[in-house]
Image (cartoon, rainbow, N blue to C red; front, side, top):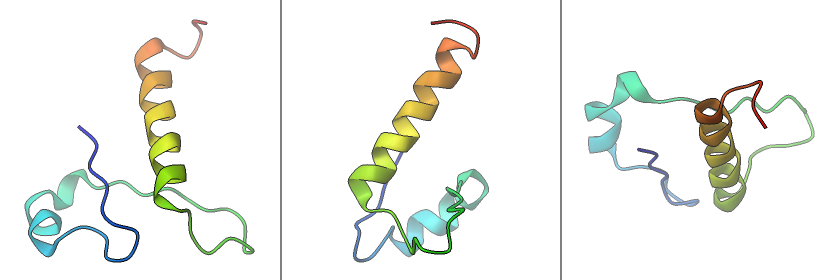
Length: 59
């Protein structure tokens, strides 16, 4: 399951406390980019989940 917070406020503190060991981050390698909007973040995460489930070598 993937859970995303609001662009303005993120996730509630309760979820941070409850699932702290399951959080992942998306590295931003460019110093010109401060953040990604929510729809972009969701697209990247869903793509990665599907890629991993499908397998690296399969197309």
